[in-house]
Amino acid sequence: MGHNALAALIAQGCSEIRWLAEKLGARPTTMSGLSGLGDIMLTCYGSLSRNRSVGIRLGKGEKLQDILSSSPQVAEGVATAGVVVSLARKYRVSLPVLTAVANVCDNHLTPSEAVTAVMNLPQVEEH
Image 1 (cartoon, helix red, strand yellow):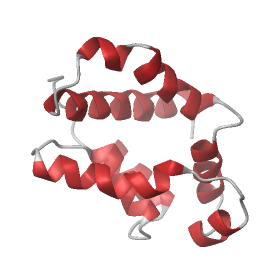
Image 2: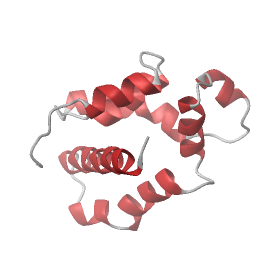
Image 3: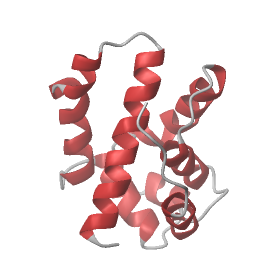
Image 4: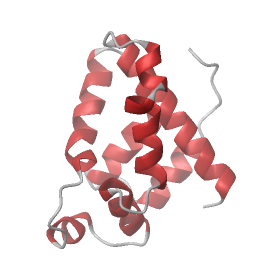
């Protein structure tokens, strides 16, 4: 995946997190600060990020169960992905990138299928 496509996916994911957080009552400034955007950037680009490591290994074709069993650390995003999608359904917020992540974690999509599906979505106006 190229830098532009990666940036587009991350930007969309950030927007989705903000949409859900605001629907749940979070302040927009929280999401754009260190505890929101800062944490997301560290997760997406930090070489020590457990969640990023899981994603990279999934993208290389490893099975999630093998990845999780080979690591003594917890990648909390694996367990929380489905919870986020459940909250999105409950509050009627569309989260295509986060739903794709949950579908990969649940073995409903391969990482390649998830990226293709998300990159082929029609563009929508910001909320």
